[in-house]
Length: 429
Image 1: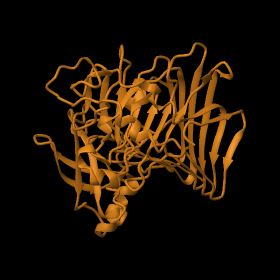
Image 2: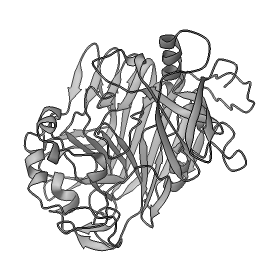
Image 3: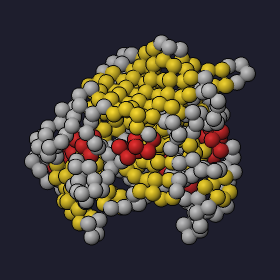
Image 4: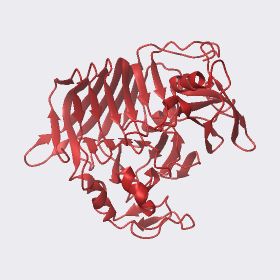
């Protein structure tokens, strides 16, 4: 239920068979956030510190938006302590729209738990969904304390190790690694459709950096990590992964099967795949206030406090070999899609490649509508694809692109337009 706590010990809380862990949506979140004044956006205004209720540049630091990060206190579910929450067989964990979950410590007169080191483990067909494609909109999962607490530390590990195990961030879902929500809207799609002036998009969220986060580990052994909503942040179908520039944060990445992917003709060895293309931001702490996490069509630094990009699928990331001790900035660079048009400035397996995903419409077959995105210079390019070059019928070619989560692309650098798309076949990885 909203506002509850799960305090774990050093053991394992296992969900098996068809069991579900559902973080219930808050019925009053929409009204709560809508009741706090939020000023009109005006990009001609200077980037400065300004009350959130006033007209403002969307890249400004916004102050006095309710209680800031504490706006979610009444409905945020807190995961506290050490141990493992495990999903095996066909078990599922779900954070739907208007549900808010924080991995944090606690310090009250009645309870003091100074170390949270939580593992979420997915095996077999286990899933954990912060929304699923466009069909099921996501809520919020944030890692870190709202306020700094001396002597406290927060750690989080995600282990994906199952043939059909997957962790997904669906439309409007938010995963904050050292970043938390000040403003979030969970308005139901039906209400949005009836009242267009109140349409809410992820670019209108407000976020701030969190505290006391010391270590985050991803064990990507077998399965799929899905952050593939290929939409601009001003589209209601977009999702967001935010990384906070927290001092002392170390990120580890572990793979069961190293996949160096050095030569162009090398064949992928790993059974794990990141399906990327979704929006990412790197947030630095400001003196005061929160930021709108803008991801539109510009890649790179938008302000001294905000860097925007898109997540790279596995076939656009560096070699899938274990790395330890990445800083927050290094981790952001690791997962970010680099320039696909400049072979001298980017990693080898990004040049001439793009992320690929289903458009995600629930009322039509998944493989009928393909979206791709990549980076050209400082521009994020997103486009729909109607004719993928390669072997097979249209449906099978689209399915292959979705499975690989990546395609070859030919980009006209003068217009930043993708002029052709070709499937990546086995032996061409």
